[in-house]
Image (tube, rainbow, N blue to C red; front, side):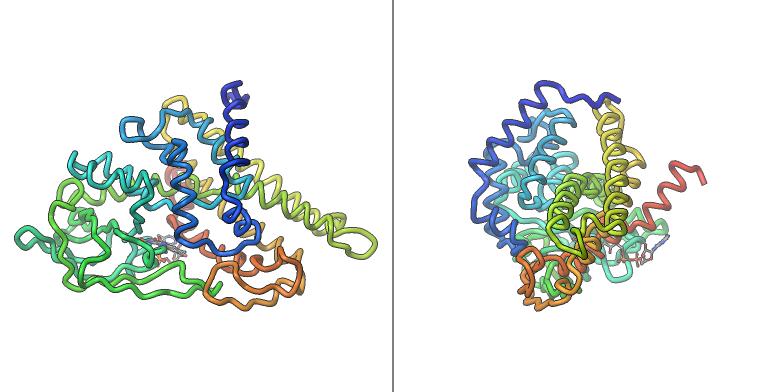
Length: 396
Ligand SMILES: Cc1cc2nc3c(=O)[nH]c(=O)nc-3n(C[C@H](O)[C@H](O)[C@H](O)COP(=O)(O)OP(=O)(O)OC[C@H]3O[C@@H](n4cnc5c(N)ncnc54)[C@H](O)[C@@H]3O)c2cc1C
């Protein structure tokens, strides 16, 4: 494994820093710094700025508007963006649907759907999970029956992130009831404006509407919106999940947050010193830092393997578990640091918008702590990732 950044990588790092200094909109930067909620327009504006620079669909092949960057270059960009606390990119179009369309779609489908994803003109959401079908995804029941030129879709999807903003949803649907449940599944793109779709919000612990239930009642979907062959959806689903797990560990963001923890705790007076001097607190912080460094090296090992032409393999499950556990640990350290200032929480339906009675940085801490309980569930629960590790790595 070669961990030395080339001159080209270091020059690129500088280029990103210069870009962020001049192009990161101050209004969005301020919201991010204060932990205030972003509007849809903020996210779209930021994604468009990156796209204009050619830094948005970095994992796509060049022929579809992506890049031919090395994994290290991608890593540099992601690190710099996270260090400056830029908005998290909405993954459903660029990281999930896009790769499916350019890999399995027809030329007509590529022409129709890829430009909207590349330019962030179309917001996508993911219709995989159903009540009763999460980890056991292949048991899904949402039915699509071909009648003439249309599929008629009936069923329920749940936990659909940001469906309230979405223009389109990519769905796994059952087109056939087969003995082997994976075989009767198809991959369908559905316009959220179609008649018969209803979205109901699920309000999570932090008081926000991040996830939803989406109902389909006799929704007509043109058969030309089927991706791949009918019944081939399970292979596409697995392909997409591989893309979903990429980057879920959030190492770069964790590095930024640990740095903030150190900075802030060094200003909080406890007894005769600062909180950072408190041995008990310091031990927890240092333990998190050590684990983060070890996880980062695992990520670098995976990157190194990818640059040598290998696939990420089951190590992505290790990254998912360790990364999300650390996200939760760091959010707990923030709560512990704040003491009683962490308690006040007057959520008004927006992530991070509680009115803190303590210092400015206190506001988003409790919503973030509550919100991050999700991290060990979504993208394939951590228990499922442990199953993957026990089979694929430990051979149990
Ligand atoms: C915040 C959030 C956002 C999400 N966004 C989306 C989205 O946009 N689109 C979408 O389609 N889905 C989304 N999901 C759904 C997510 O993929 C599922 O929640 C996840 O796959 C787990 O499924 P489940 O909730 O049905 O739990 P279940 O599968 O019912 O699992 C319940 C518990 O049992 C454990 N368990 C289940 N099976 C096993 C097993 N074989 N071995 C060991 N333990 C097991 C699980 O780990 C879990 O702890 C989201 C979830 C969350 C929390």
